Each structure stands twice: as C-alpha cells, then as structure tokens.
Image (cartoon, rainbow, N blue to C red; front, side):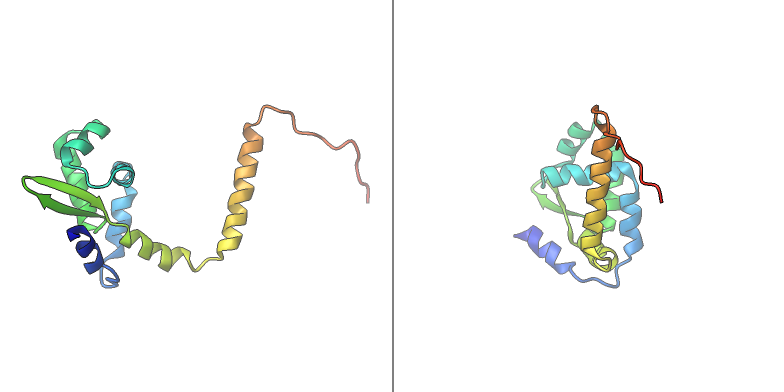
Length: 135
C-alpha cells in the first residue's frame, strides 16, 4: 500500500521536469533496469545486480538517476530497499506527446512495417507478376 501512495502522490506533476525522464530513458542500461523491474517488480539491489551482471556501485548510480526522474520508487523494508517501477511519468509522456497523433494511422503504419519485415525475412521467393500494364 505504501508504494501505491508514493505513486499516487506523484501523479499529474506538470511542474516536474520531463527532460529528466527523457535523459534517464536515453541510457540503454537504465532501460534494461526498467525492463527488469517491469518483468519482476519490487527487487532489491542485489537481485537487480545478479540478473544484469553489473556491480552494485554502477547499478546504484543508474537507479539514482531513475529515482530522480521518478521512474523508480524505493521502499524500505527493514534493511532492504525494494525498487518498484513507476509508470506514471511514461504514461504522462505518452498522453502529451503520442496521444496527439492519429492512433489508427500509426497502427496501420506499424502493420505495414511488420508485414514488410516478415516478407523481407521470408525464405520463400516473392511472386513476380507475369503481366505488364502499358499505358
């Protein structure tokens, strides 16, 4: 319940610097940390370091940047610090920057891209039409 209270207290913070979220997500190691937390939320530093093959000091530095950007919430449980993913800043960015675009059009473009990639990776020969239109 404590985590939910921390997340809810940060909702709708327009004054927060969106640049810090973009900066935090620009690093591939931090995105990997966010992916690991998305897979299994509430991990300790030791658990995160084991799965990433990373030293504690470098993981702590990356987690501090994510915490300052409000992407990770830290909750103390005894001597342990549990790290939880906070999806609120990512959702706010999605609402502000991506919801303005036409979602059906983006889905169509995504489907075309997927189909093109699948046909490019296919081992079957592409059928060539046996006719030519002349105008």
